Image 1 (tube, rainbow, N blue to C red):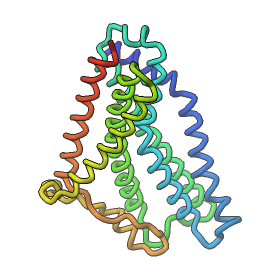
Image 2: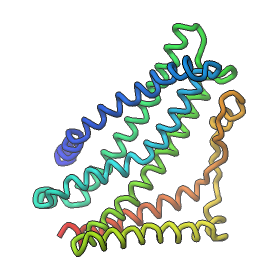
Image 3: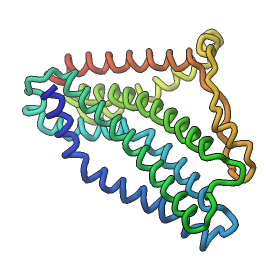
Length: 266
């Protein structure tokens, strides 16, 4: 436990400047910018509509945060492999701590964005006497909506982190021979992987296997029925499809760790 605590604290020390900038950006973009845009650009659009759109952009951006955070941390430590890779902790623990921290900071960032949005709505309620939400939208619906898009964003973020780690590992391995060749081959493998993945997912038997157990976006669909909310988030995800994604992600992680231990850490 003390080993994990030390590794996570090290990650926090490195991440503090970036997290401070993220807090400032969230406050300005969700807590300030919507009021200015509503006042000077689109006075007929409710403030919370503008804030919700900006929040949606944040969710898209935060879905990349686990991958970006992990790769930045790995790349930084690879500049001193003599220190990082010669610690008593096995490579699985070293990488696992980085991945866990990246996901944890993504969750914290999502909660921060949601909190700023809630405070903006509370500000409107206090000074105008009415909720900033569109008419007919209960607060519970909105909380459910935030939970749904946050969960989807985080799920995609973890998958992207696993893929990013795999291709980063391949690049680090090939870079030992030649940096240019490493970039070309890694890029070709990246494109080829997504081409093959597109063919597999469009294959009939796979689509059938991945289509069991529908999980609808209930609150997103409810909000989509409110015309002035201007949302277009509908559809469902399938439990079997999510399970397949988890299995495939686990395979990518195991493959990446194997390559890392055999070809990179030596």
